[in-house]
Length: 377
Image (cartoon, rainbow, N blue to C red; front, side, top):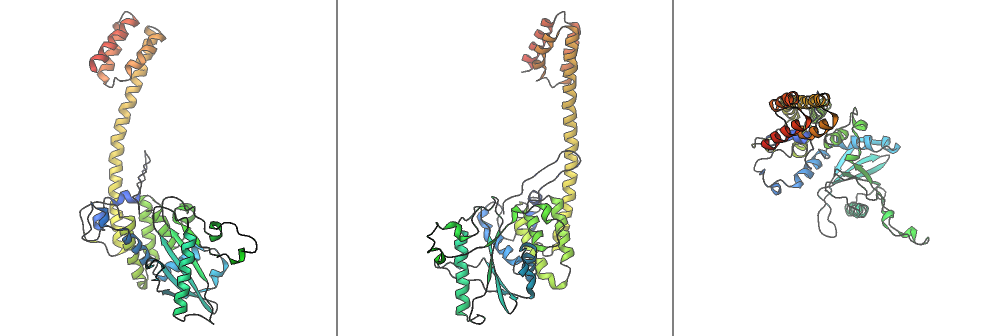
C-alpha cells in the first residue's frame, strides 16, 4: 500500500515477479516534483500522498464507482448519480484544526440530498477511536448545513461516513461507536450516542475479488496492493481504455499524479520533468518491464551456471564416496564425507579420486585428505 515501499518477490525459473515499487526505483525522478530532495524524506511530505488521493476522489466518476462497487446495498440503485456535487469539507473542530483532507459529496436520493463523507485515513497505525472521530465530523457537517440554511423541509440529511484506509496492518478498530462504550443500564441506553461508519480497508480486498471488475476504485485498490510490475502495467492500460472520453481528461491526469506520488514514490534516479498524461506512465512502465525481463534472463543464466556447478560438485562427491565404499568400507566413506564438503575445487576432488586408487588403506586415504583440507584452510 502500492505509501511504504513495495516488496520484491521472485520466482526462480521461467518467470519472475517484481513488485511495482521496486520497479519504481528505476524511474523515480521522472516522477518526482522539482525541488524535492531524494535523501531527505521530510522534503517529500505525506501530505502529497494524501492530496493526490483527494484529487482522485474529487471526481464524480470515482464516487459513483465507490458507491456502486463497494456499498452492496439496495438504496444505492435509487441514487441519481447525475446530481453528484462536491461540497466544501473544510470544517473547524474544537481543537481548531481544519478538516481539509476529507472529501464530502452529496447526491439526490428521492426528493432530498444524501451526503457521502469520505475520510481518507493514511497512517501506519489503526485509530481505535475512529468511530468517535466520525461522530464529531458528522456533527460538524450538520452544524455547517444548519448555519448555511441548507436543510430540506427543515430536517438534516442522511450521511454515509466512509473510512478509506490503506495501512499495512489490517483494520481492527470498532466500526460502531457502541462497541467503545461501557454497557449502560437499560433505561440509559436510549441516551447514548449512536454512530457507525463504512470501512474500506484496501489491503483486505484480494486480487481475485478485484480483477476483471471495470471499476476505477477497484483499480486503485489493485495498484495499492503490491502487485507485480506487469500487473501494474495491465491496470494502467485498462485505465486508459476506460478513460478515453475527452471529458475525462482531468481524471486521467489525477490518476497520473496519484501513480507518480503513491505507486512510484520510492525511486531514486536523477530528477526529470514529471509526466503529465497517463499514456506516458504506461509507456515508461512498458519500457521498464522489458528492461527488467532482460535483467531477469541474464540473472537466470548466471544462476543456472552457478547452480549447475554446485550440482556437479555434489555429484562428484557422491561418486567418490561410492568408490570408497567399494575400495575400502562404509566406515571410511562416513568419515570421508564431512572432509569432502568444503572441497569446491574440481581438480582437488579429482586428486582425491586418484588417492582412493593409490592408497593402501582407508586410514591412509583419510590422512591424505585431512592434510589437503588443512593446507587449503
